[in-house]
Image (cartoon, rainbow, N blue to C red; front, side, top):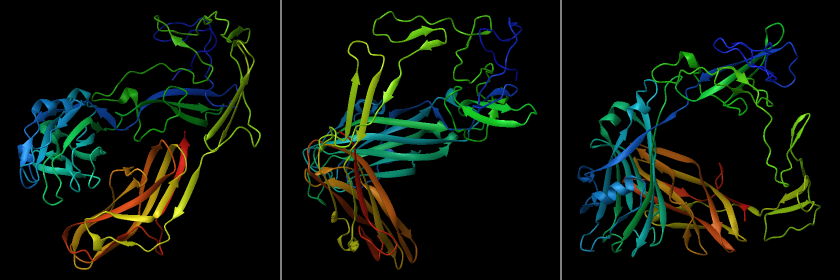
Length: 501
């Protein structure tokens, strides 16, 4: 590719002749005058977003939970599937185990597909709020993806026993499905417990549902993100450096395979932009005549507080000096970041800004034996040895490593879930996280560590945060289900770090 323009000279594009000779761009620091750099437009194979919607459909074919059922009002279902807010009304209390259902067919816009993908990846999320008046019974619903009447992925909704006023986020994790099946009509299904339930002896409840998001992605070689690759060579033609950027300055790590833009087919963009120098001082633009021109001197706002100036060397802007604070300055437990700013009154050209980070944090190893979850299957098992105390108001990053053991001597299935709770205010920090799962036809033993992480905003302190665990048996016989302690291969740990006030 030809060299790029410099100075005030236009560059030849489509027969437009420059008034001065072109010069090679300088794209890498330390290049010598005789070095030459070329910039080539390329496309990688990163996944791209496909335009998709979900329309309401009859949920009857997807009733799989025993007892009675009710379909959500179609108008409310359409509102929710359009990312609006809708209500799953409470049952009148006469039906045992009443669940209300919503179903929507996934539609994609074929015009938004690039290349010839055979598969797409579907994911979805939704927010639910228990309006009350009762606590939910254990895991209170389901968020699922169907292919016709065949289930593709099912995600149970938790945490267990979500109280009135509680919130949760249902998620269908990214799932790869054939494109032809999606074009034929995939179905997203959501059901929530709205009636009485004799198992938990709780009454009916109403739910507010909002923030539904449907995401469909596809990928094809060379139909991903466009980027620029600049290659510099020395006087002997040997490559001295190669840089990939999105716009000539923002670095980018392309997803292979990488294909030249002019080789793209099947709906990929084929435009071939002109070579433009990636030097950080380059302000060249393309004119209507097809040539590239350096800009005129910029017009400056005449405001007396505008410190930018035109000088013989170019546009000059104020410099900012950053200085630290002496130890023992204006820090305190009520703030995690101390900032001091000084400057000349009026319209200063120089400011002095100092900052010091002083966050609170803690780390805890749960030095205890594992809790026997099998003996209390289906019930909440708190782990008081995991308690951490958030000492003051602020926003905290909280995470936990949960050590577990799960096994069956003869074959069986089940799973361990965990969540974090603010014991001071009886507030859930996280929805349930699957710690481990087993589905064995014969003897099998597992052991490992799973991570739970969240951000939590505290209006007042101190607050005690505790790990909770539960084992759920789904079939056969499980001989060992324990977690929350320390063994020879690892430990259950709790950590927190205040990230802002």
